[in-house]
Image (cartoon, rainbow, N blue to C red; front, side, top):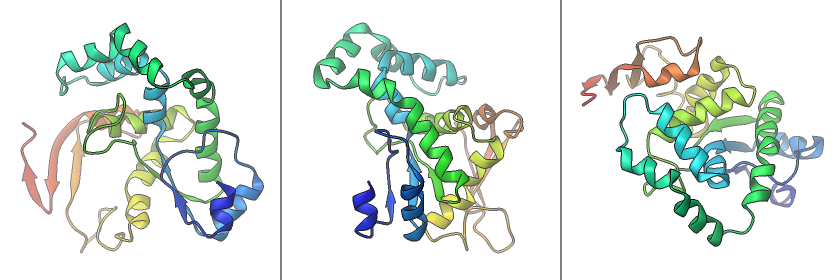
Length: 209
């Protein structure tokens, strides 16, 4: 990762999990004005798919994902197949604390950190579209971020990352009215991001059904 930064790289789209980042790495990140995307969920899912599927099922309080999807993840046969494909899952699981600490250290140092989930249009191993993005916020709080910090790196900082902060990322006059209105306060419990009351996209109210 340091070699990438020394060569002028301007960011990472997955967490660094191999070793704790040191002061030299932080300095290179800041010198390059590099960005860092958290993907705690996809690593945690890959390290232990059954545990992740169980966590996701409990998190999905409104049952947006069909039950058989979780059953596949929890099934011991799925874990066995995954273990045959990759021989480093024990290493990966052991390094999860390093991943979490790296993310928070970079954020505390002033590096532009934004949330991700590693989920693509096809989904990563065990990660589910929509749900995994919300779960990433929960994992970040567990990693030491405050709920307010998590909301910040998922909104205004994410807009800065994309160069769109003049139009998106905060509620201000003149910005695009993309809003998620919640039933409960996420500053008290980040899991309240699940309690969606209404969504507006470009000022148009969207159906939640």
